[in-house]
Length: 368
Image (spheres, rainbow, N blue to C red):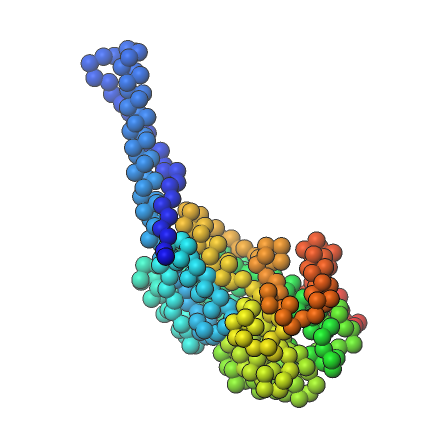
């Protein structure tokens, strides 16, 4: 069922001069009548303005352009689309998406969605940062937003949304450090840039906090959409002694999961609760990033006449926007989860500082 909400806001007050007829302005009765007429006129104008604003928000069209991983990547692109689907169900918006198979698709896809009259256009993923910025700059009459990028000087019609990926990565790293039987774990990244470095740095810190003697294998696929490459990297890591691998590689990570199943090893998912999504017992937990929640909250704000263009928003553990997967209890021992819960509270309280860059990791954990 689709629910359509009619929202009224404060219309702009229109002041008009009222000229009395038949009596002078000093006549008390006529003055009162004129004052009432002013009030009625203003209320009528405000009502019309509010109805116009509500009508504008009733038929909101919100769309997104995927990264090269595609809409069914079981990761951040799919999560973003699920956020728009929830907004369709709960807010009555009209959602749309266009898939990108290569970077050269970004700009034309954004242009197509602009031509279709979408009110808000999302770019999903850091790699779209330049294309989204140029689209927003070219079309100041339209609203744009991006997942996984914060602009140094965001435009008034552009919102940047980022997450503290290093925080849940620390927690799943701790789980890996506690559960490894070989003292050897791995990390597979999609591409090397700030977002994935946050995953890597937090994970390494969590592993070393739990198990200072553990070896951590690290390799990047340089692709978010190559399952074969993800599988090949994971096969190599498992053959070299790893028994748990954490992937932050989008659709490429599906290959890592396939490798874990075939090698009868463990894997840690990313972005969504991948154990719940894929039904694979090899997935012991996931570092969840609620892209869907962020997408929905921005849609809800827009529905209410609010859009925080010209700013960057960051979501972390304290916002409930990142964390470990709800299905973790199916594979992770209870005592470890209790320790993880305490660590989460320490991170929220600032008692534990989780590194978000390699430099910060080296400074805090380089001697371990």
